[in-house]
Amino acid sequence: MSARSIHSFSELRRRARKLGPKRVAVVMADDDIALAAVWEALQLGFAHPVLIGDDANIRRVASAGGLDELIRRSEIVATDQPAVAAAEMAGGGRADLILKGHIRTDALLHALLNEEAGLRSGRLLSDILFYEDILSGTKRLIGITDGGLNVAPNLDQKKKIIHNAIEVLHCLGFARPKIALMSATESISEALPSTAEAAALTEFGRRGGFGEADVFGPLALDNALLTSAAEAKGIRNPVAGQADCMVVPTVEAGNLLGKAVKYFAGSQCAHVVVGAKVPILIPSRVESVDDKINAIALGVIYGSR
Ligand code: COD
Image 1 (cartoon, rainbow, N blue to C red):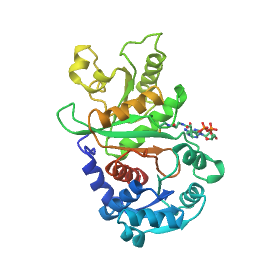
Image 2 (cartoon, helix red, strand yellow; image 1 turned 90 degrees about the horizontal axis):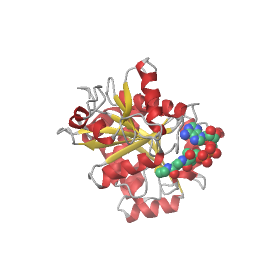
Image 3 (cartoon, protein in one colour; image 1 turned 30 degrees about the vertical axis):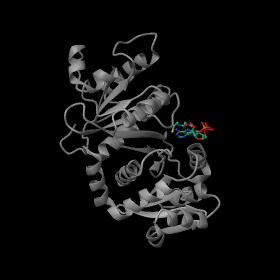
């Protein structure tokens, strides 16, 4: 963890405030939690909301939530094709980030991934989630990728997911992020293909393939996050016990881990999809207003790189 890196969500919001406000396009904005989040982000100074969708529904949901002032201070784009409109706005430089509202994640992603939407940059899109970890005794942000998009990434896709994660961590001030390649064990085993892939990716990183980052694995959860566990296993590497980001083998592992830190450890979260022309925020319906505000802050910082 670098001295300049962002350690908490309150710091994340403060950094976003210095970089904002950015235009946040809310797709199908008739969503009470998304509206509450953009209202808070507006008041915190890092969002200018662009509310896209059915005009009457947006006004009705905002009014029911006591957010008439938000409506006065936002731009409303009335359309029955909100995902297409958001993609066009972002592709044309009229929106800086996209936030999912009352729309299914797969429907939104399909619309944004459409070649004609103009949002693709030729890169792989991947999701990275951050939570506040306290295992080391001090609060720090740790990333988990990819628990959102790439279902079973192959070796090449994992390289791209790692590059995306390193780019985000650099934006958060991690000068040389420590990237742990996760599996169920730190030993290389034929029975667990993710361990052999982790070893290959470690070798790629050792030869400088990932630039300014330490990339190492395979590691299990305990020896990625606890120095005591890494020491007990005799693993000597800067990443072991001190990971800034965990790269999981499949979307299921990442999704389970992301929900575990939220529900078992009670951490707030923030996640962002990177690799398109603008950051895309796809928080789930059950994520809190705070999680969504954090995600907007993360998108603002990453989008300002
Ligand atoms: N990055 C860049 N381009 C992509 C990506 C990606 N990660 N995935 C697909 N594309 C491109 C393809 O090359 C193609 O041109 C176009 O998008 C459509 O691709 P399809 O037909 O393969 O699209 P699908 O049906 O695979 O859908 C892509 C999704 C990202 C929607 C899909 O992979 C998905 O549903 N992922 C899991 C999302 C999910 O349910 N997450 C769980 C919890 S949030």
